[in-house]
Amino acid sequence: MKKFWKIIGIILILGLALILFFYFRFKPASKPEWGLTFSYREARGLGFDWKTMYLDILADLKPKNLRLMTYWDDIERERGNYDFSITDQLVAEAQKQNVNVLLVVGRKQPRWPECHEPGWYKELDQNAQDQAVLDFIKTSVEHFRPYTAITQWQVENEPNFSFGPGCPVISHDLLRREVDLVRSLDSRPIMVTDSGDRGSWIGPMKSGADNFGFTLYRLSYDEKYGGYYKYPLPPAFYRVRAGILQTLGYGKEISDVELQMEPWFTNGALNTPLATQNSLMNPKVFNQNAEFARKTGVGKHYLWGVEWWYWMAKTNNDWGMWEAGKELLNN
Image 1 (tube, one colour):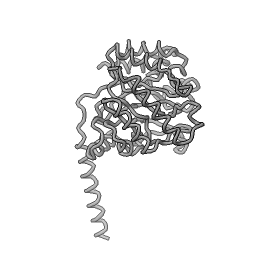
Image 2: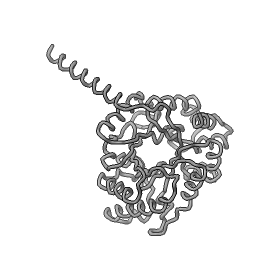
Image 3: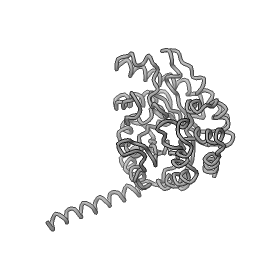
Image 4: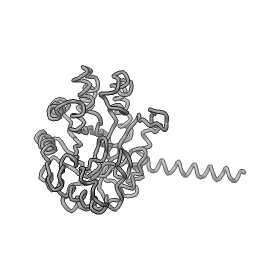
């Protein structure tokens, strides 16, 4: 029995030493950068003209970094006929205001229902579906390539994480083909992403991408856990994982692409009591999440929920989140 506990002790000491090695292997940023993810579809869903909201965000919040989307079901409603006009306006305005853009391409894109494929896609067999995605990515990159505001491409969104109705994971083979395709078309860095707490991180990076991004949610909802629950993970968890990734030679740059700054909605903002929304997210929680993100050591964070801040301000005359975001983005 004494020998057993001795072995256990050695294993624990070695495990702790390994964790400390990975923790210090990742060099934290001295001052993180803050940016925003903006979804014109979310703006519409909250009842606003997306262009008015977007221009107000750029004018008042003055973000230096933006993550923008290319929603396939809007762009290629009919196969072979592309309409990039909305994303063109978004990227062009960002470029005019010297904002750096991380542009997401592919089938899986931020915001529910996660997979955003056109109706005709479902009628294809698997091989044809894969080719359709590749064709869409190729056309998208070729179209947006002239914009100097785009500093890197994000290929798919959490490709190996199953989330959203009818939105399965993307195979490792297809993801690699997508990354290889983008690399053949443009020299800018390529990012892939994964769930911050549930994803493997290493899996998506096997695609050969340059940079890695993870999502960081503090309060989530799951019926299996009885409703809302807070992730019991310290900032060091993300720093250790970043250290592991870079020790293995993955991820030249690691970013937090989705820092939760809006409530986790089960039925949307328009159908959730304001008291519930305020209890789930408010300026105090905002600042706590920002401080948590700082402690991860990651150099760049894209705040998630600016459309909701705008809705709270314009519809409910509650400017708390808007002002908290403004202060963080400009300090």
